[in-house]
Image 1: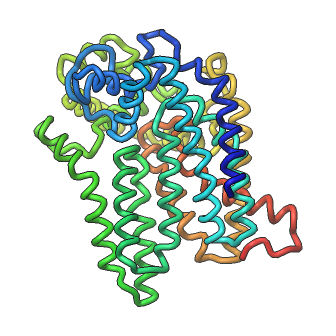
Image 2 (image 1 turned 120 degrees about the vertical axis):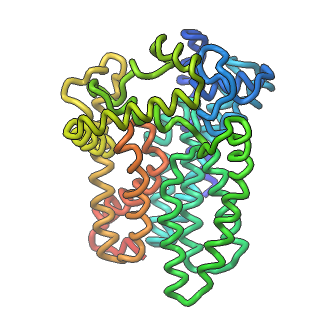
Image 3 (image 1 turned 60 degrees about the vertical axis):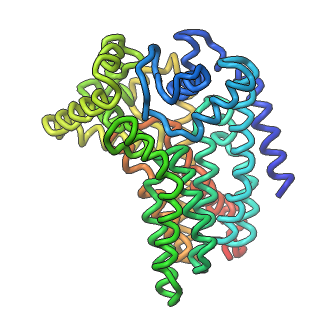
Length: 411
């Protein structure tokens, strides 16, 4: 397994050498370097606190979650703000997280489907194109969150067989850290946790104390940040406050692409001025109202766009017009690869379901629940990355079954 991780790390670092200069683009005051997270990290280093996510001082912010933001701020403090050294360090952290993900992929696949699938899945992740490209392409918490989701998914497979409270407490603590890294991935938490609790209930083990202790551990971690937000904004903020903006950006009259840049304060000067004038929380609330009003008055268009977002999630296909093909030359290859991965995962799920229905249930739960929020707000290619390890496991089953149709692949 060490060899697996080292090979994966070497591949990712090799690609990173060619990718890191993109982070050093000075356009828009280095906004490409971490985007809003980079802005907030710079604000922390400058002594202005957790705030100012755009181009001017706009005060305290809850736009970003704290873990990755403070990690970037620490790197800025040590290696300089928007420097080459900071870019290399942050992308190397991403690459290391992606390489280490070989381990939970191996253990989750082995637990569910046996040693052979576990080994093949671990190596498949080591060479997985998205697992190589994205960690070295963007300074963003997606890759770290993907590792955390894999660890949590692996843990829940084992927790379904044990009522040891210390293990469940650790599970809750890690979920809390994950929520403070990338809150969007928490959508699968209640569902896979309920599945594990049901397994304990079925086996006449202590499910209720496990559920309570893991929940308390989760809130023990996220609680201080929720208190911070309440003290700063004088109202409850669920870790991040940008859901209204995401809803509005993805649901407007212009759906030629995934989201409407004219409604985003980072690309439209008028929106940026409004953001500064009314304040972050009021701006986000206004955007939520605009999004909900558009959905209410344009229901057929909303349903059509939602279907397009669902298709995009699993195929990377948005439009036959390819409106950004000049800016996104990899769009067409991504459609092919993403669609192929989905087809293989479906075939692998079917093969695994026939062999062991119980083993496939947590995979179905996670893959169904995770993208729901993106179906109704807006989607981007990187949003699906946290569930890629599960897709790789299922796709590996399909490939392994095809290569050895007469041998017992599962079990």
